Length: 282
Image (cartoon, rainbow, N blue to C red; front, side):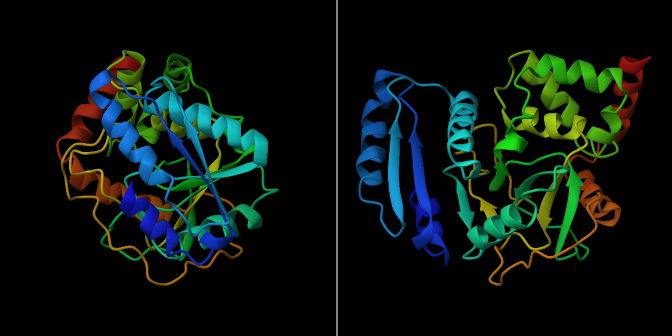
């Protein structure tokens, strides 16, 4: 958390931003001391327009804590920027989030703004749209979050009914359908896969930066739902990413570039996925 806060404090817009920190309750008595320690640190945080803390008495777990927090503050403020405590931000992260929120506020087809960009080999546009939504440093409006469907079984059934599983899996490059299926079976408690599927099924778009404004440090096995890997490592941009008018449609060049990268993460997944999805659909 400290690294997340420190990097956010270096953002130009930090002093103009209200920071709301949600501290979930301990999962057991053994965690009470560590939760207390984190809350003592939170009380020392400064450098923002205002800092407020929500201290939950009970443990809601990652998914429900995120869902309830985003719902509450999106309803209260009309928009929200969301960072989990293992995200390191570029000094220009808040600028990109706020510029995107302002620029596309009235564009119903745009559901969110995302800060992370995959370390692809090719060059990506300054900004681009992809269908769906992501979770590593992001922002949305109340109108966007209102489309969130928490029932993973409904989402999975709709993906299978419409036979869009291969598309959701980036043409069979990454096991998003399986992640959603696992969520319905209680094998994971991911809110993010439900957020992604909700946006995807509504044909909504997310604005992405061509240079990453977020680095996830939870892929060292310290993050929930993240195993140990360095394949997502990036250097955050030391220059601002400019939000400007681009076609409000999915950028197929960027999608193909990301698809190629995702295939390197799961080289044996594509053939298995196509066979499995075909058997499900037929």
